[in-house]
Image (cartoon, rainbow, N blue to C red):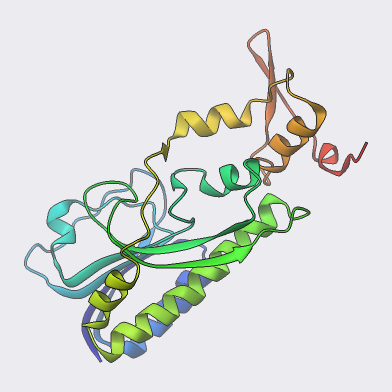
Amino acid sequence: MFNSILFIGRKNCIYSEKLKKFFNIKSKKFTYIESKYKKQKIKLNDKEKYDYIFCFRSFLILKKSQLNQAIYGAINFHPGTPDFRGIGCINYAIYKNVKKYGSTCHLMDDKIDNGKIIDVSYFKIDRQSNLSQLLRKTHKTMFIQAINIINYLFKDHKNLIKLIKQNNNIKWSKKIYKIRDLEMLYRIDLNKSKTGILNQIRSTYLNEYRPYILHKKIKYYLDKKLLDEKN
């Protein structure tokens, strides 16, 4: 049984809700914080200590002093492989036509997607899958990974060190994708080939998020039917 857990999940996330119930069973004292939006700030009791701090699909960036409140480790489940750091990871994975994708469990430090890697879970990418389908698959992979890692740590805290040593050869990419990079990906380059443009659309179209063409400083957002165009 964990003595104390701080879990930061995401609003309207079914897997965050499932993990809440899971942590309630696994810990004597459980604290939950709901991540709702970017730039959200939280205040923790600086005298409080937790066995672990876990983040799952969280917008929050914790301060170093907050991370240090974890006795054994502050752990994040990142929706991407170590090749993709920062924002828009899945978008770039699709755009680059990678054959496999997944999620990374890692220790958190004061830099973005930078801490020691604990585990990486992969799945194959079907070239016919769209962004929405691959996001769902990523989140499900993250959830399964989280359950497996937490259960392993539950058996023995020393297992964290074992996992880090096992994955010591896996390194983060030097490239960190930022919001301006993702904004440029959403802007369709009409100089590209037809295949290139359709691939750019496939990697960016998601519900209210749509790629666009910029003409005379006016953005023209693309219709979903372009995704189904074959010829």
